[in-house]
Length: 403
Length: 86
Image (cartoon, rainbow over all chains, first blue to last red; front, side):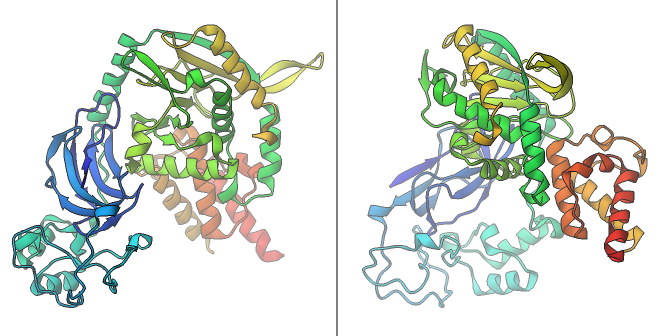
């Protein structure tokens, strides 16, 4: 039996509030499935599970706040998964279990007696929810999703009173869409805590480097001219890919500083700084950034930005970034001096693209220029390595077709 | 598609990106990127949505014509008309 616990979603997180269970006992989960929603200072985070298996028991009630590391649920791992009794009645019998013991839920039909496989392939086909016939009828009439209700009946079965309480508590139109939970004051406090810790603990050094991004702009204009809007690329995608590729050659900027030592990360998960409308900031990971072809990187980026702004970040995206990239895009200022997000050891900044006189092949002409910056952690690297790292990013951006 | 419908689509899609903005208070000639704080990703999402809802091709080279509210509506109207006469 494995425990699924409240994850740490950043150096500054101490506790989280469970606001939604997306699974129930009996459900099969696989690695990466979203099983719960937790409210943190950074907003509502979708919590993924890492242990495949069958949910045995939920240990934490909705709306309880528990410290990081607290067990939230028990998961029966694949090897010890229980096989439903061969003679189990078909799941058409909706009688609520009478025993108060951990309630068993019939598996999706038809489970062979000694099934060597389990229905991992169809996680959407959830096990039947324990509910009284009256509750079921009422839920059907009012269009209520039973999986959204926690039952108070025997063995956690849902009663009609539970459904009524749910109806009373839920404003009708807000049913489908989870309320956006972004408290600007809490987010500000979280940013302040992380940045104060960074300034207290990390001996930053700063470098800046101007590069000509005209090749990127020309290449993008050519490519995007042939594409519908859905498939068009932004220069920010090129920048992320260039940073990710450069990190393969400069692994000392990719990883975490923990317990007085640097732990380089084999995987490159670039955290993308995303501004929240009305103030605030989050920098979730774009996983395996260096492995993604540009088209996939772009669609991943669009999805990440959209979910972050809608308050739907996943737990691994909060905890995995191995470096951060902050881009000011086409507005704002030319240079950005980043503050490292602990326990990371570097942050790369891109200012806005500006047209400047530039010497190309001995002649001065107007070119599109960007100022890149690096804030590095002196406990891990020096300015010399940082300079080579920034130069490598600049070099990669001269040949966008190879990114 | 009528002009008022086109206007409504533009307003709805802008509000999807900037829900807190009252578009009635936005100067139709102002640069939307500054007036309602939209970045290049927002703008790309806006163009994508307008393309899906109107069927109009909006090549990247035309983006500068779309940076104001009035320019955006005028551009889409013109493109619709030219599509009809073809």
